[in-house]
Length: 585
Ligand SMILES: Nc1ncnc2c1ncn2[C@@H]1O[C@H](COP(=O)(O)OP(=O)(O)OP(=O)(O)O)[C@@H](O)[C@H]1O
Ligand SMILES: [Mg+2]
Image: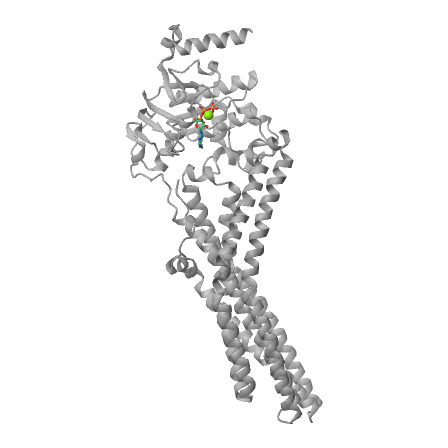
């Protein structure tokens, strides 16, 4: 399994640029809009200043009214611009981050089963969606807002220097100190934010896993234990979140204190100047207003730094996922012989975990078109053999050939196109029966689907569904019984016209009628391809050519079914006898 290291480097600039490039014009527009709002922000206090001075001096009512009108117009315009900025910002961030989401999903879908076995779906959702959401601000507002804040600061300070250098100097010192402190300790919360994200991912993983297993949890009275684990996960989210938050707001707290001091100093200086008649009342207001306004860009810089920390941890985690390589390397051979495919295992050894070997020295051959019945106790390794045929895992040693081609040299897509598998627990997707049968392939016509179901003898079953092919199924398989799900999966595989099928029979028992339908369908399916039937009931295997018996990951018997059935000393014959006695009892 690919390992995830603790601390990954930040993704490179070119990684970021590939997502930023498609939105560059929008970003430029956003920047211009923000500049305009900044200009309006600077303008408004000056209108008020004129208004106050004219009101306290000798201004006419009409000039006061026009100033008031101007103020109103500027205010409305800046609101409009704010709406536009928000819209555009969101638009950009969705565009950019959706691309990352799609890439992450695509990549995760290609990662090998060893990776997915240890990742809960909930955690994957957090990583593909949650982490990326944390980056969204970075992609939309970050550059524009940092830029806008600096322009606003420069505007305020520049203006103040024209009027009064002492006050301007005080404001500049405060600004430099605040910004300096913020940049100095900006990284303080990154590590903590990353732990917070991890704790969140774990919590979601827990919730998802438990909801998926809700039946088992309820039936076994596991709710209190589950709640206990849930509370513990919540606790780590809380602790990690509190720590991350405290560290993240530290720079902000520092500036609040400094800001309060600055406002006091500026106010004292301006009031003195006013009392000495150096400035007008309007100017006093303007100075005060501009000092107040200093806070906004500084706070915004702080916010952006905080967002940047979140984005950085999100980016690290996204990048880390994207750099994980699947241990299954794709081959480049497309050539498989036409028609049913032969299968051969040569000295295959396999283990899921290093310490425990699951399959030992498995060697056998199936000619093209032959049908194999695979039997053995639960846990003997039957499903594992099928997983290896589909290259869901790499072998420890040995070779598997399909159609005389080593499957490692084949492109995975070519392999999957020719092999069909019905697993023990069939997965359904949210959609109509048609979507589920065709796996959302729009090129598959209803006629073809109905023809296939007819051939498999499943037509009455589909006709019994309330809306035929349009009936909605819900994900997870809750809307079909185990037998129905198997019938359904058979049809799905049949529609892909495989050259090799693997049928992993469910261990649950089906009723006699369903079983008969299923058997007919299986026989139909196996007529045109090579087949491996993993069976829990021997009667399912009446029509296979060969039998393999597995025990503890080893082949203890392999041969022609008819011959084995007639040889009283064979394991298969022994199992048949036991089966018959069971039926009689
Ligand atoms: N993903 C996995 N990770 C680790 N071990 C696994 C994994 N899947 C299966 N195993 C182990 O491999 C062994 C063989 O499992 P396998 O699923 O092949 O058995 P099986 O013969 O299909 O059993 P059943 O009849 O119950 O379906 C078992 O001991 C099982 O615990
Ligand atoms: Mg199995």
